[in-house]
Amino acid sequence: MRAFYSGQFVLPLPPGHRFPMSRYALLRDRLLEHLPSVEMEQAPRATDGELALAHTPQWIAAVSDGSVSTHAMREIGFPWSEAMVERSRRSTGATIAACRAAFAGGVAANMAGGTHHAHADKGGGFCVFNDAAVAARLMQAEHGRSGRQLRVAVVDLDVHQGNGTASIFRNDPSVFTLSLHGQKNFPFRKEASDLDVELPDGCGDAEYLTALEQALDELDRRFSPGLVIYLAGADPFERDRLGRLKLSFDGLEARDRRVFDWAWQRRIPLAFAMAGGYATDIAETVQVQVGTFRVAFEYWRRWQNAAR
Ligand SMILES: [Zn+2]
Image (tube, rainbow, N blue to C red; front, side, top):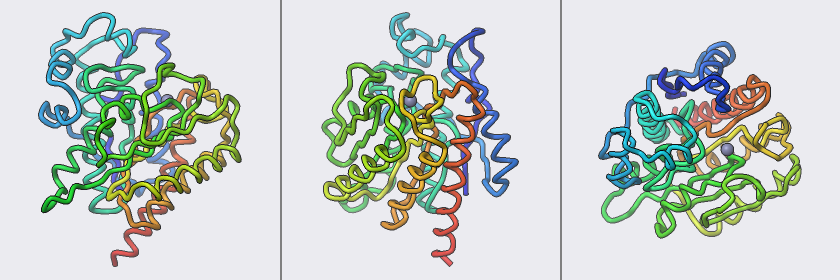
């Protein structure tokens, strides 16, 4: 299984910044240790033309040349730097590469990404460009044939609402946006996804898995995707600092299994990205992510066995 990584995912931040950059290197180390068959590859950089599939030229230019307003940078939550631009482009390129790899091998990963708070013309909540949105549009351009457009489902199980993704695809019936998220959590002004499921503070495994089951049923009734982009946020975890939900390691593994199995049963290629994860002990966030990779790898093998 191919997984796209970049050294540029790690952004130098001021001391005491609350974003846990160390988790990227930690995930890489843990995968090398526990899942050595995962093939890690350097992520390509998304070009201006690719980014323009989901973003305004003004936003791409402002991010690239550092002319983003102080207010807009504050909404992102990172200081501007060349490294931030590079990170954002690579992170988007990684989801593009993962989607292409998923078409070839069934399942593939971005070891970062899931920057779902980025809108067409602005960032927010540690997100600069919307990797899933750019990748979905690019895959449609690459795979649309004889008037039949590729349909993409973005299954966003990060604990925060995918407001940027929802806003980008608001009037686009070819992309279905599903978001399961904490009702009382950031962003406080939510956008309308095709399907939003709001969960109460303290929601545990059983309640969450029931809600997921109902959401996938509804997705089945309303849409038939040719590609799934899965945001496997680790922040619904019970010891996450920002999550407010109470999912256990087992509950998160069951969540992942349900999504991978759902796509596998329908033989829909699936690319996944890490999205959020802010456990007090960051090693626990990475443990959730490694769990996602373990399940993903299992389903990737099924694809390979079926192709033989
Ligand atoms: Zn999140």
